[in-house]
Image 1 (cartoon, each protein chain N blue to C red):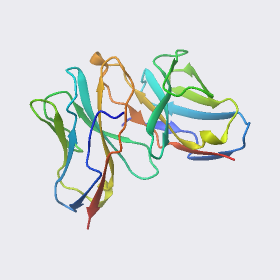
Image 2: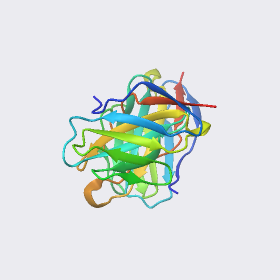
Image 3: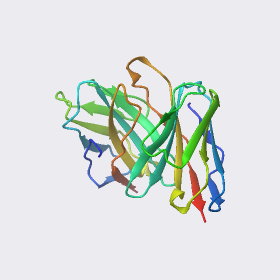
Image 4: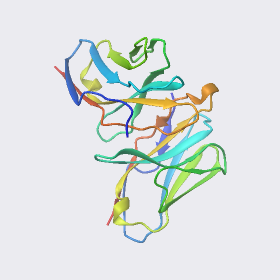
Length: 115
Length: 110
């Protein structure tokens, strides 16, 4: 089974702090993703990566950056946390297959609160 | 905006089949249909996906109509642990983005 592990289930930080969210997958997947999930807004894509050191902006990249130094690990960084970044953050990974139809597999999420 | 329409909620008796419908009338030829579910406080769990043929795996069956404008996810013998929000998503090749709609809240009743 695919395993996507996020480092923390719950995290509380203060406004202005630099916050790191870590994600590790064990299936040698090429693609990795960061989403945030908010009530009434569904899942929104922040960034994704299709290879080591490669990254692409999603729909809402402002205030975030990412790092992918190793294939199995994808980090999301909140440069200067703000209260509107309080959310559930979800990491996902997928293989690169013919037709790009490979499903994404999600971790259990990090519920981040910014005070 | 989500490209799918699902009922807001459904109930199903434990042990019976749960049939969850999804309308995707604007689906295009290269778009797949994916089903996920999300149990409270957990990440979305992949269930099944398909293009035009019916698919079955250990969790569920996916029935796609011939015109591909709708599909049904079937959980053959629902259990209490199947209580969750079920999302139907369409996604084509060339894009990685999933658009999750509001989903169907399935409650399995004892």
